[in-house]
Image (cartoon, rainbow, N blue to C red; front, side, top):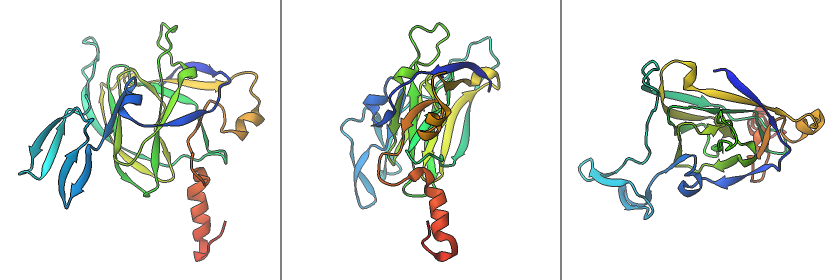
Amino acid sequence: MAILKTLTAPRLPIVQLEPFTPTAFAPFGTCIEAPLTTRAGNRPEHEQACSTADVIVANQGTARKHARVSAIRDFYPATDPPASQQLHVFSCAPRTLPRSGVFAVRILERHPFTTQTFVPLAVGDDDAYFVVIVAPTATDSDAGWPDLRRLRAFRARPGQAVTYNAGTWHAPMVVLRARVDFVVVVAENGTARDCEEVEIVAADADSDADADADGGVGVKVKVVVDDGNWGLWAEGKRMRMRNGKARL
């Protein structure tokens, strides 16, 4: 992947996390949720009333197939080398944050001709979670660069996955607290058109001291909203466990 453009981050308020819901995320893709709300024993009983997926009884009556919850599509031009659907596993380590709990978005990427779906496969800790950061395309940009002033961030709950629409600008996956492994479905043809990136740098007026204090250069997102400095969680845990003593 090559950086196609360098964007200057304007001075903006720190972006706050939003709940990750199908309605809120609809302009950017699909928020995929486990549709079952309750269970009786091991048998699924109730589907969410808001689910619009087709529900099919399967596995000799022991399962509910919720069909077509998210489209997997590609739009590569016929003149390009042929693309094919690929399935990858991304093992994402937790991000290290400053004490403020602010993450600085320095890179945004898009896949111009394909959707991309991230499905959590396993997590390294029950408290791990991931943040979905997206930006719409600027309306005054002929080349379709992201609109940094309208960047949004969503905290995903357990049981949720995400599909980015083709062409949606998004940050590389942001995982907190502990590793999360994702199954990723995406179309690729092996060319530079599979993925495009922009780099975000500081405005001239930004001082290095200010950048270091609140999360670094870039568009800033408050990704830790509960108590505790989870950006340094892994380091703190190692120190507390050293020699079997609770140390800080």
